[in-house]
Length: 424
Image 1 (tube, one colour):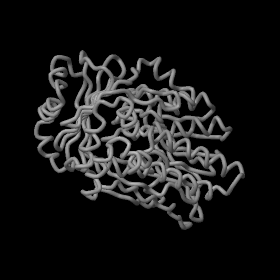
Image 2 (cartoon, rainbow, N blue to C red):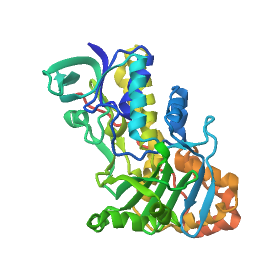
Image 3 (cartoon, helix red, strand yellow):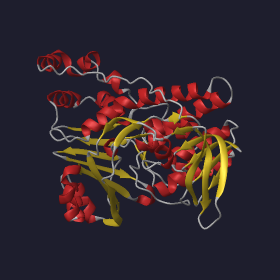
């Protein structure tokens, strides 16, 4: 009998296990893969996620694995090119983009070292349920005999296609359809200083340094154009890089390492993240388009929030369901502004007039460029940045007048109330 069983041992699952085990919780983590192993990923760990790795004592391991820091950033939105540095956030001023073969192994090893039991190569086939409450899992190691393990709480950290979420019927809300396709690959011999982001008509491009001296390049197209992309993936990929200054030429002068990988399975939703005997974390509970690269950092944040709630509930400081309701409220409040921004960006609409005004006003202002880059990485709260008062300081009286005349006053997104879950 365990206190908590976690299904899935990648970033959300291993981080949750690590934090719970350090709190003295008896944890079992099961994962169908073995580590190190790769998976589709944004690679980016934004500033708040890097700060969490530092607090957890793992950032030095990421750096020691040869993961380069990206402090300098080019943000090229077309008419205006912003160049600057990330702001400092809890002593962190760099974004890191590790290969998942590196990051996931470090997290799994750290969870084991903290005292969590981790079983790789394990297939979960079903959940144990009794009287409407989840009480464990049924499964087997590949090639082994079926077995049952029980726990006070089962956490689904098993991704977008979560067996846990599907089995308990976790409700989705704030749903939006898939908006983009996302593909990436690696290059050797491509010079880069920090990160590069480019917004073009119906295209987004990113380039970031990663392990082994490689550069990861990412391209996004509207999902409606997938058939055109699929017709000649390599040509479509390279022609998209050609839109990003001299990035296409730098890539051609280097050497592509490995295949071009990607997906169109990019839904956008929140799921109700708890119920009788179960909880969800990471992509199992919240997923958004990868265009803003928030996935890994969101998983770390939600792992921390969930671990705090579980400790409070199992430790008797408050009823477990009440603690998990608080987890949902805190997660949603933290995630929704970036979720709305990300899904709007991934819709590939033309730049709004107010966006053009803001970008033009930022040019030549290093401190304000740094703050703006902080917004993109989640270090500067979006709901505080996009206020009339703050924008007025940046763009001045005339710029604000132009916004107001065009009825472009920024609106704060409405935050949802926690969704109540009826006992099953």
